[in-house]
Image 1: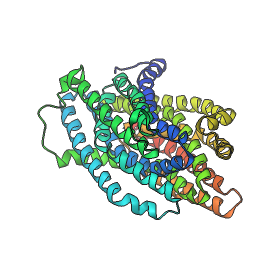
Image 2: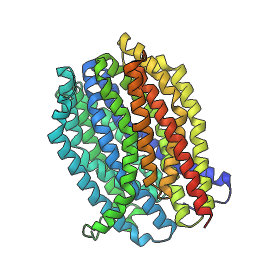
Image 3: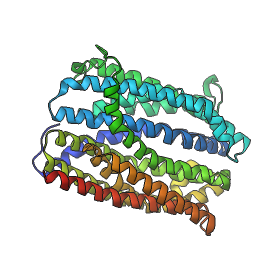
Image 4: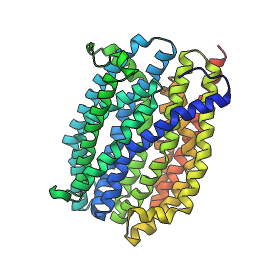
Length: 449
């Protein structure tokens, strides 16, 4: 990365940083995407089971993995301030924290998943698939978390194309093992939805080894010596990472878990509704990869400029990121609305599932603008290391406004299952508005110094 002078140069730098991140995000997301897609082609019961399983898995994993995202602003600001000698220790302590978090989540799922699933009114076959899927995915927690630390370190150096290259390998690896383990091809056991979980776990281990080899042997990463001269676990350093990372993780958890909560609450509507809802969420999440990537790019660029004390440049990067995401939101909304029949048919041949998914996709189109605003605004705030107020705003927007309003509409009006989607729109809109005000306030406060 280097200092930019004009808005045009900044936009080009943003594209340079964001495009590889986008490819990386899509490639990593495709692991889950193909789990859902290929299981949908297996049968509806396994699709529902994987949907329920991923609804437990994703918010817990993403929320705690979000803690590790603090590596990006920490390393970016260290590099901007020309303190590269401190980078190795930050990354090593991040790896220690990754292992601790992975073990905690594995323990939670190993002992608690069956009890949680037992509280739901699920068909026996669906509950069985969900439990097996969660266990299988948990076997990939350690490599997935360590890879996230390495990836955030790589991205913070501006080498986002390297992360892109690594992640591009994940989708074909995952599809290959899905093909073997879901459908039982080439003599492998036919595991259905559980096979998708095992395929993902194998993929995460392979991706970690590739990333580790690159960080250890290739420039510019080799010069930092990340895997040499390991320091002892430092509670002070872990505390610093956690101080920034925990609010980030809670913010991400608050957003992702509301989608999972809606999926779980929809279990009362039956297998068809769960499957149709999951189709809409799955494709919408794929489109969300662009505003999410812009958000991560904003964290890197804003953090770099803040570290160098170029606050005016940091402000410009913030709003260029938001405007770029908003422009894309109109494209994604039109795609969801006008191609909704084709999108639903990609996932299922069941007419009942397709018909319901088409209706959910209309609501998905409506919250694209709010999603496109709140994501890069949060990313910019992370670049400023302003994370505490942000997570409180996220909690209120999604859990005080979004989910309760969705429940009321679903329970006491004729909207039924669609009421939850209206609640999602309300929560995301509240988040976009309040976070934008927060970013503007932080920038004015810094400019006053």
